Length: 353
Image 1 (cartoon, rainbow, N blue to C red):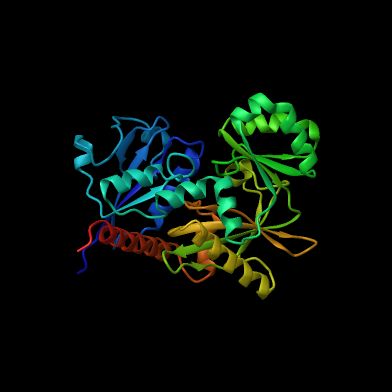
Image 2: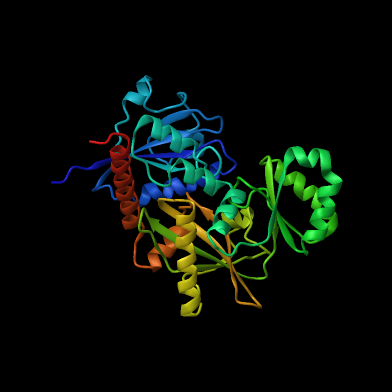
């Protein structure tokens, strides 16, 4: 009988997407094949303290009770010694989890982990860097402008004037390093710009002003390392003007077409561009790539890439693979296989024989 692999889920975290992580981790835990995997769980609370827990299915109150330990789960603490893992599976969204920080800890510890490497995670988290790299690789990127907090403090009036001249209403203002639509404003009136900028700066020192594209919002899941493949795309039909945090995780009134009803040529182009974006940031394991299909021109625009996409029961990433022929448990198993393969390659690169 083949030996079970020990998988450790790491979830929670310090970011504003903490609650989303709890839901994603619960879905991953429920869909991992316990005949093939022994599953351990590490919860990170909102202050960055770690604790080994029974599972992500526990109520939040229980997760936050008891003794926590600091920093790494493989340090000298008594709890850490109990953790024996073949692969770490981070289910952490946003800063301190999706941005290369936790990946750096795994690299220092020399352990296999699911998902993108440190540099790909950092670039993927930063929307401005992602757009710059994707545009350099020839992807069609929406018009955008980057504003830094220190410039905003000293040059507010000039920046406001540049935004008004450079972007047609409606447009978006968003933090560069945040997900789940946190800190985003869709601007309809020029008088809203200043408050929208201030709101975005609450979450990051770097923000984006981004052209609004009238048309369909599409997403495509990518899976693989050196030879990634793309799922069928799906369409988001927002309940309000855009798919905001409240509707993503609280109200759930947005509609989805999974897969999207698109001409075959558009489907193939989105899949091609999704893989191209994945390769542009040198991603590995998984990513969800988001696009706009402009209504009048039928032109496709790259929006962003998510290196740890949502894994809740309603999340696009697993659902798109399901309609593309890969069930949730099989998807997770493939991600673990890719993590082990990446780790073996990394070891060969660091310690050549």
